[in-house]
Image (cartoon, rainbow, N blue to C red; front, side, top):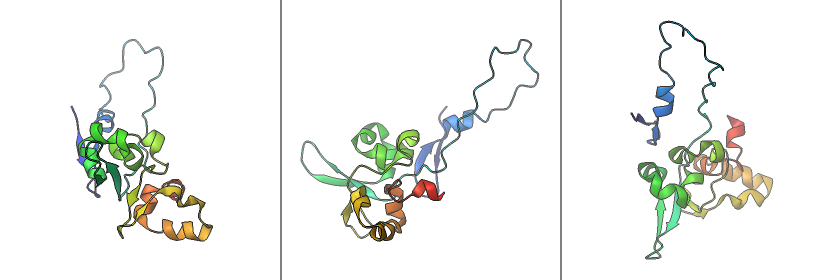
Length: 151
């Protein structure tokens, strides 16, 4: 079975693995012990978040540009995760182990409708600190802004 949950930010994620790992132990010990101990459960990365900004995609057929948010990616991960969503929306694309603390690799819009990439990490230190104060930019530029280190 699949267990989906919507978090406080409105992002949809699959709780199947977490829910299945919470099953109760057996009532009695096994008659024959297993050859090796069970693997430890995998911890969910608490640092893994989707960016709060919209990222740009260009329609191949029409050439039109569109900006997508992570809710759209979560609703159709098979359509969007390999088109920029994996780095911008690692929680929605289930790419937390590889992308959860890395910068988004796509062009995105800020809350002031400016477009930006995470390449501002080459700016002067004070400028990077100022830019990273915007929580939505911190969520998109997780490595540059030290998002995971701060948690």
